[in-house]
Image (cartoon, rainbow, N blue to C red; front, side, top):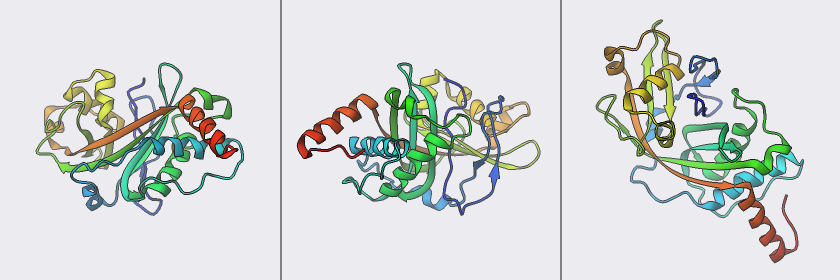
Amino acid sequence: MSNSHYNYQHQPHSGGNHSGSNGDGDYQNQQMVHHPQRLLNGHGMKSVAVPDMCLFCFEVLDCELNNMDGPGVPLFSNDAYPLFVTWKIGRDKRLRGCIGTFSAMELHHGLREYALTSAFKDSRFAPISRDELPRLTVSVSILQNFEEAQGHLDWQLGVHGIRIEFLTERGCKRTATYLPQVATEQGWDQLQTIDSLLRKGGYRAAITQEMRKSIKLTRYRSQEIQMHYKEYREHQERRAGQFGKVQC
């Protein structure tokens, strides 16, 4: 996997665009989070993520790729949370698209929107095609328990996702995030993660200890659940046996 791992967006009415990258120009037109007060949503790690969320994301994408009417109202919670939808492909689960929001969204609408946004509008990749569908894995991440850290190392690898705010060498404000699993997937320590995130966010100058200490870091936790296309189809076939039809 590349170092530029996860993209993010939020509501269209929110603040201005900026670009960032991992040095290869992969990250373009990311949007800054405009409503930091919403980051407290979900404090306490209430259990939220369920397999039906992955099924729903697959249904949304399946229907879109096959020009079918989208799925109906799902049965899981419609509470509002920040969320990410990630698509990976193949046995090695290469990143194929990942976009989410730090603004709390009702889960039914949010998962429907970001299942498609991450599949078709991640600027690092071409839109997902119908032929790729059988090789996909989807991950849903529900973000909770946001806390302002006391410093750039005040978080735990494999436990916390991190979002940083910093000023570039030109004095422009930037933000960037990694979900909790990214650092461990890449084999990074904390400093490597921070430095990669600064590059991802568009910082081009030499990274000094003074620079690291100047960032504002918010840590959070994530409930992640994932499902492969094969599991999704097996579920659809079981449902077809029960009701005599497949929705998409």
